[in-house]
Image (cartoon, rainbow, N blue to C red; front, side, top):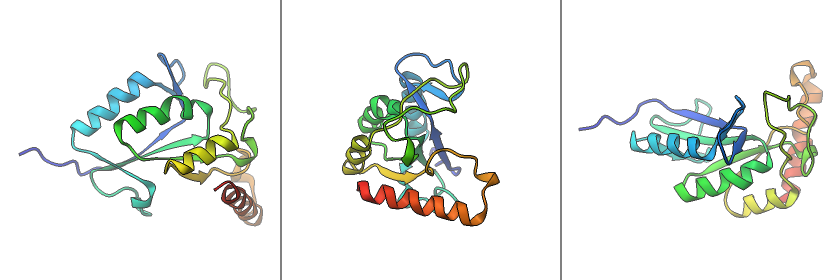
Amino acid sequence: MIARPTGSAVLAIHHVTPARAWSPLAVSVAALRRRLLELKRAGYRFVSLAEVGPAGPPPGAIAVTADDGYSSQVAYLRPLLAELGIPWAVFVLVETLGSGNGWDVPGVSPRDRHLTTHDVESLAREGVTIGSHGLDHRNWTHSSDASLAAEVRRSRERLRELS
């Protein structure tokens, strides 16, 4: 009898590329497909964020998330996860929807536009969990509790308007 996996994980993805990825913040579609299939063959099951509690996913489970809401996540991640039947969540920056950003660093992360409001609405209709990653990717470690709470509230309100 094969032992069921006892560990769990949240797989956080940033950029997805159609070919070999050169960035530490990116993964190619082929490499990600291989890894996801290996995890399935090892007995892991993929869960939605609704099944993840404060302690993380249950034993033997993996939740897939996408950070920053990049357009490559719609172009390459969405069809791969749909093909494999894997639920996922994307955490978007509501003030960057449809634009670029100023924090991608050449040689570290590829230039990638952010999702549009249409992309977010479409993903939500498909059952993808949409979460807030804040308004604009500012460094929260220097924010007061009050400004942090206001940013989280405003970003969630803006996301609800899209749903």
